[in-house]
Amino acid sequence: MKNKGIVNTYENKTVDLVQRLKQHHLEELQNPNAISIFLCGGNTHDQNILRKELGNRISHIASKYLYTVHYPEDMFTELIAGHHGKDLLTLETILANSVKCVVILLQSPGTFTELGAFANHPILCNKLVVVIDEKHKGNRSFISLGPVRHLKNSTTSKVILTPPP
Image 1: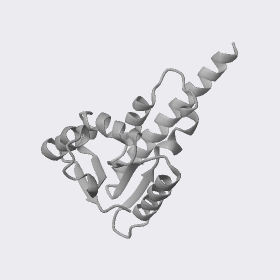
Image 2: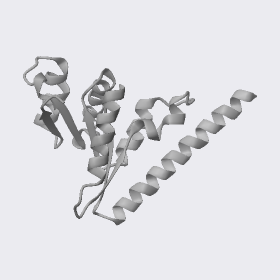
Image 3: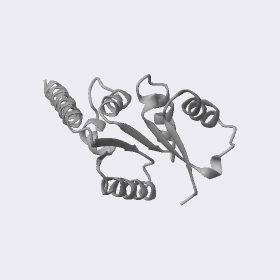
Image 4: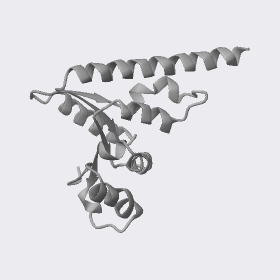
């Protein structure tokens, strides 16, 4: 019966997460100047530092908009440890559906996978900002010819090329 308690705990945390996201989304609807961003990127130490710096800069932009940055690992720390019955793709989709924009710093195999999944999602494919190192411009890879080309040609999402760090 010990496992049943663990399952119930994870189910309660999932319900709590969904309720918090729903409340956040409702608050945003009441404030049209609030913009939530889901910021995805690589998971190495340097990639995390770069992503957190970018998130900090975004959340401190002085404008009429209030930017709030969310990180997948902060939202799912406890759920990643072994949530029963839900996979991370489902959980990330719940979060991504509750934000205005999903920024993907294309840095690692995990972000390549997120790009493919989100570019193929009927709602998320129009909420993406994909940041790619310009040294990959012109690569004839699946990423360039698949999700990136699809986003450029068939969605309102943006693909941004940046110089290497």
